Image (cartoon, rainbow, N blue to C red):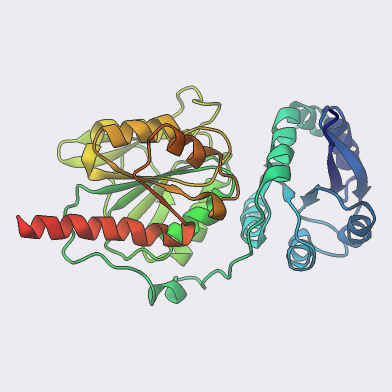
Length: 361
């Protein structure tokens, strides 16, 4: 039986990039470029004509900015979009904004030797298009203004004082994870336990991601620094291209940032973070696995649960890609399955239940 090919529309103002993307995509047996466009106005007509399955979209283009076009597209004709972004501060901020607007993922343009660089990205680009073609399109959400005050009124709160500074929240995610992480962190109160996060993201983008979250949340959010203490009211994101692990120094939890080989083809790897939490935090950890392709984090979450941690997985209906949560659920790594919009509340409820039990003792 012949399986229909993934039909791709490539939108980029560079004729060279359009040519290279076409060469890369058409070299794959399961996808084909049905058209290319030099700007969003041309792309708009080609969408109507070809009805593509996936669009690749440049950020900076003439006549209409890629983000403006994406916003209109997701409102009027939602479809899976993979952004093509330059590896610059502006490019990383634009890529993150695109994910907020509903893009499935992004891929960076190479810095050196555009042709050789892009051709070496063949597997990466093709993989992201395959994921986008099967991803769930979720309705765009209104993001609170910096400071997170819109979320503040509804945010669940821990009983004060905290049960213990020993408690930690450990989060892993991949495709769709930037928005899922924002939705989990934004309602959390300033006295939340320390949080460690492994999100599959390339180098050069996690700093902008952390800054964006820091502007929206009541907790402090930053890229993790090797050797720093993990403090309540703070979230630490694995830098792109580095693993993040947990260790202890006396009574303190400490971050380890390192470049050991990729695990499950990823660095940062969710399994690396979860495994370290199982070893050094045990029952004091709460593990959360969110949307993402593949199985990175499933085995680590199981080891966390076996070490006494409470573990949660995002449910299928709210995932952009249900791969990682599905794998974790299948091997018995998960105590609770929850919709994304309830995840922070479920975590807080569990912590409050610990406090209630402690008070009864």
